[in-house]
Structure formats: C-alpha cells, structure tokens
Length: 95
Ligand SMILES: N=c1c2ncn([C@@H]3O[C@H](COP(=O)(O)OP(=O)(O)OP(=O)(O)O)[C@@H](O)[C@H]3O)c2ncn1[C@@H]1O[C@H](COP(=O)(O)O)[C@@H](O)[C@H]1O
Image (cartoon, rainbow, N blue to C red; front, side, top):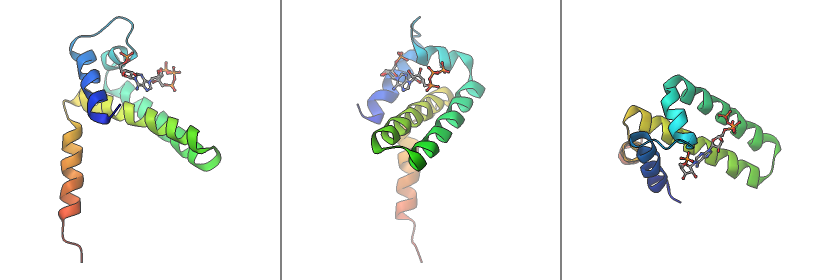
C-alpha cells in the first residue's frame, strides 16, 4: 500500500469512525496522544536502527510513517503538502 492510499483510509476513519478501528480511536483521543505515539515510534526507529535487523527497521519505520499520516489527517494537512515542501527544497538553488 502506498502513502496516498493509506492516508485516504485514515481520513475515511476520521470522517466515518468504525467501532473496532485503532485509527478512529487514536484520532478521537486527540493530538497529544498522536504526538505521544509518534515520539514512541521515533525512539523505536532509533533502537531498531542501532541494534536490530533490516526487517525490524522496516517495521518500525512503517509504524512511524502510519502515525505521522494520522497526525496529518488530524490537523487537516495532506501528504501532498509534504511532497510540495520537499519539491521546493529540491528546486532551491544551492551554492
Ligand atoms: N498501518 C496501520 C498501522 N500501523 C501501526 N498500527 C497500530 O499502531 C499501534 C502501534 O503501537 P504500539 O507498537 O505501541 O502497539 P500497542 O501497544 O498495540 O499500541 P497502544 O495500544 O499502546 O497505542 C498498533 O496497535 C498497530 O496496530 C496501525 N494501525 C492501522 N494501520 C492501517 O490503518 C488502516 C485503518 O485501520 P484501522 O485502524 O484498523 O481502522 C488500515 O489500512 C491499517 O492497516
């Protein structure tokens, strides 16, 4: 699944919550809880990067990516805005 597809599902859970959805629950808990999860997942990426294998690192980066998309959805921001920012940086003249 790509980032755009996952983001669309997350927005669907935000706008039409399902009772058994982790995403809907996390969004309902609010931004502080989402930020807390991002902090935890970021630490797990560091630990995996230092001491664990590639598969573990992939899993932890997937967790961090997912929670970052939840934060964007919670704030009404989109992955396209991040892509635009990266594009702007790429096009900025470097000296
Ligand atoms: N990609 C993900 C995804 N990645 C990680 N997680 C959840 O993020 C949590 C990770 O937190 P932890 O590692 O701390 O595990 P935990 O102890 O269970 O978490 P907490 O209960 O402490 O918050 C786990 O519960 C994972 O299931 C995800 N939950 C959902 N998705 C996708 O989101 C979409 C919507 O799914 P629902 O949330 O089921 O609606 C689907 O495409 C899912 O595949």
